[in-house]
Amino acid sequence: MRMVVKVGTSTLAHPTGLINLRRVEALCRVLSDLKNAGHQLILVSSGAIGMGAGKLGLKSRPQDVAGKQAAAAVGQCELMYTYDRLFGQYNHVVAQLLLTADDFSHADRRANLVQALERLLEMNALPVINENDTVATEEFGVGDNDTLSALVAVAAHAELLVLLSDIEGLYTADPRRDPKAQLMNTVPELTAEIERMAGGSGSGLGTGGMTTKLHAARLATEAGMDMVITHGAKPENLYAIVEGQPVGTRFLGHHA
Ligand code: GLU
Image (cartoon, rainbow, N blue to C red):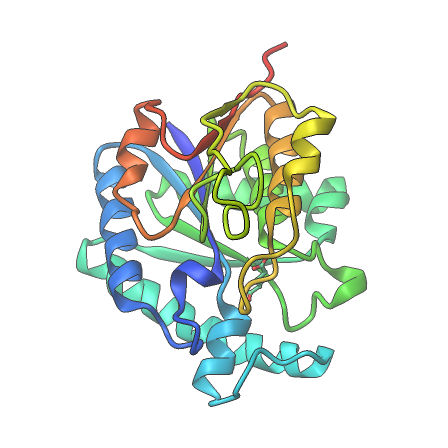
């Protein structure tokens, strides 16, 4: 199976901005194992800005554009260094792709990207993708990695998109505020009611939230693939997700 896995800053880093070693090590082990089992994987990883802030010793994620650009330039190195080391332990080769919105909106650039991705997958390398945050500032950027991962999954004709988040999935209400909130296992259709259940961004370090996840779900399901949201603290869940077992929330792809 060809799948795209997106991991958010809240999964990769502690609230301090420094890397969450236990999580990231577990994630790289599971992804390596899925590759060993023959699956084709593309990893979309956030964390450049958050980790850059941590590495630079900033007290919080920078709010100004130049500060974010600078933190991303530092953090992206740290991120790839970490992935290179951890995937290297399992003999997997990582490849960095830093993209901007234009790589999807211009047909020739999109074809160029797809060609590189296909060749990397053929070579059994693991593409690790992020937005090019140092240059993809507001007007050039996709803006969030949930959307970016869906654009990548659609461009690469993936069969499955998995978003590893700081929440188990989509709830009927905000579980941080409403104890009666229930996890939805399956979403066959993105109705107006489902859209209403989505709130704002959850954590201090990331930029996503349920709204961007539903946007990603729309792009993915309209292209015919399922999308799953699950908690990033349990990367082992990916095994069950690949087998189609009910974990987190699965948005069902529309088949023409
Ligand atoms: N590209 C950003 C980063 O690496 C994250 C964007 C997002 O979390 O949606 O820090």
